[in-house]
Structures are given as structure tokens and as C-alpha cells.
Length: 439
Image 1: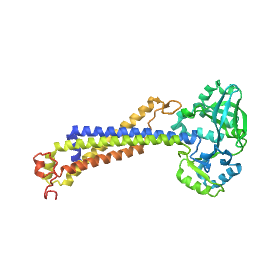
Image 2: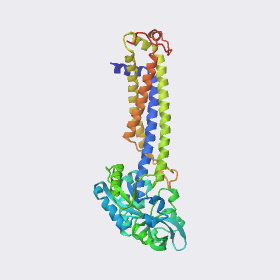
Image 3: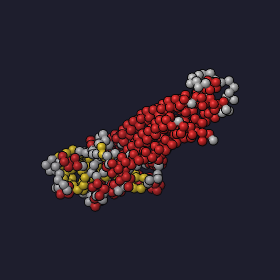
């Protein structure tokens, strides 16, 4: 019966119900779309870090290699024997691993015979590279961070380990012509792990993008065997582990650290988003979380104040109605329940409409293919809003709680007014309580 009264009261007070409902709907849509943008950004960064940047879900380094590798590279690499030891240590965890890869990097000089350009040479595992670029998640979340030619020729380095990949910016700097494979053999020079100057010849045949403007004129991708030839070694700098979809990364790291502790040398194990190996991920998501928290506070405050103001004015207009309900036998708790249920109905209806609106808006924005330059990006990317049920549920619960609590405290405060004052249509929010009528 009280639910029926609550519903009729909403219809009877259409103006107040509409203004409050609009505030709740707008707040819900705003928070939901903001969450959709942050969610998409996080998934895109996660996916690019794991697959296109080839960090894997988990990376293994020699202890302190992040700080010391460039100074004493020979001391902080895994020899062939040590690589086998790591592989054996991970044997019990193979059921959780999809595949692994090895990497090694070194600064060097890239030359086409007439021009030279300093670069960072990144040696990668061609098989792991092929598997990474053909991952469905990469296409779903981060297709703008990978060139179409990279995905189309993902097996190129498996077929031809002599091939080198450069960015379009490096191709422009060194005046390479397209297609890249038609250029003459290029030369790459660097110091070996022993400190000796060494150089190799290689073939151009592929291009890639780092996704970051400050790295576009720097990073060159070369199959790891070719880089090892350049460095006169068979060692690797790090080992990347790509986990199966249902595996908990943190739990796996705990297990892996336990296994690696049996080795005769210390190691460091990092998540793909650890600040030590992925400062960009940490910085970007940190900014987005702070921005999201700020707007969450603003929107929730605005919605709460709107609800309080609307309910307060509505209760003032319905003072005599409240007094009449009390006079015919409604207890204070019954009146509170009535007004709270009105807020419950209004919140559910408003946010139900908000779910539909936010889904339609996100679908329309995605279909419009709006493109923009994020700070530090090497090219335009599509502005995408990924509507997420969990985010929508969180926002629903948050605003629902704010609405119900606001209505509860407002009506509770009003019911402190004496019954005779309510029947006389007095709008005074007094501090005097009624004697005996609350029983």
C-alpha cells in the first residue's frame, strides 16, 4: 500500500519529481560515460603494454637490471644456462602460461650509407611478436596503436630473421623510399656487451609505431638473434611471460617469485604496469583516476544538493499532508518510509532511463569515429566509450544511496516539527519534538 501511495505522490508532484529525476539522470549519465572513457583508456594501455610493447603480463630481470643494465650490461643479462634455469623453475607453472618471449635492448647507430641516426635497438622474439600482434584483444582495444601493416605482416620476422622494422618518422629522417624492402642494405653499429664496437648489415622490410611521439624517432625493432649477433652474445636482458586469460597476475607473480628464489642469483619480477618498466602507464592512469575522482565528487555533490533542495521544497509544500497523515494514525516511521520509497522509485526510474541514454550516447560516439590527439601520442586515435555493466552498477548503487540517504535525513528533520504546527501548514523546521505523538 505504501508503495502505491509513493507512486501516486510522484505523479501528483510532477514538477518536483521531474526536476529531481533529471538531476539524477544527468548525474548518472555523466559518471557512466566518464567511467566508460577511463575503462577504455585503461584496457587500451594494458593491452598495448602487454602485447604491442611486448612486456608480457610479467617480466623477469636480473636484480637491479633496470638501473644498472646500461652501465654494466654483461653483468645484468641472462646467459643461455641461466635462461634454462629460469625455464626449469617455471616448469610447474606452465599450465598458466600461454607463451614466453625474450628481449634485449641497446643504444646504437642506424645508417643508410649517407645518413646516420642514433636509435634504441630493441631485440625481440619473432615468434612471440607474431603471437602478440594477432591477439584478438589487441584488435579490440588498441588497434590505433598498431599499424595495419604490422598485423598483416606479423609473421615476417619468422620468415626472414634478417628484416629490420623502423618507424615512419625514422624513414622520413633517413629518406628511405617505399616500399621499404626496395632500399639498399642498412648498417647498424653498437658496442658489444664487452664494450667493443661492432656493426652488422640488415634488410629493411617492415615498419611499426611505438604509439608515443617522443619515441617515434628512436626505436628500431630487430629480431633478437640479429641483435645478439651485433652484441656478440647469446644472452638476453629480460624474459616476458604471457599468461592465459583466466590467470590472476598477482597470484602468478607470488608463485613465480617463490620458484625463482631457488636460483643461485637474485631476480626482479614486474607486472606489465609496474612503474619501474612502464612509467607511461602509471602516469596516464594516475592522472585519469585523479580526474575521475574529482568529477565524481563534483557530480555526487551536485546531485545530492539538488535532491535535498527539491525534497526540502516539496516537503514544505506538503507540510499539511504530512500533518494529516500523522493525525490519522501514521507514525513518524511510516511517513519516513513513504518519502524514502518515493525517492527509491524516482531513483530507479531515473537511472533506468540513464542506462538507456548512456548506452545510446556511447554507441553514437563510437559510430561517429571521432579522432583526436591524446597528449604524447604519435598519431590520432579514435575517441571510444566502452559502456561497462560493472561501472553502470557501481554508479547506480552510489547515486541510489545518495538519493535515499538525502531523502531520509530531510524528512527525518521535518518530522521534528510539532503535529499542531504541521496541521497549521507551518514550514518551520523547529528543534522541538512532539510529546507523545511519536509513540
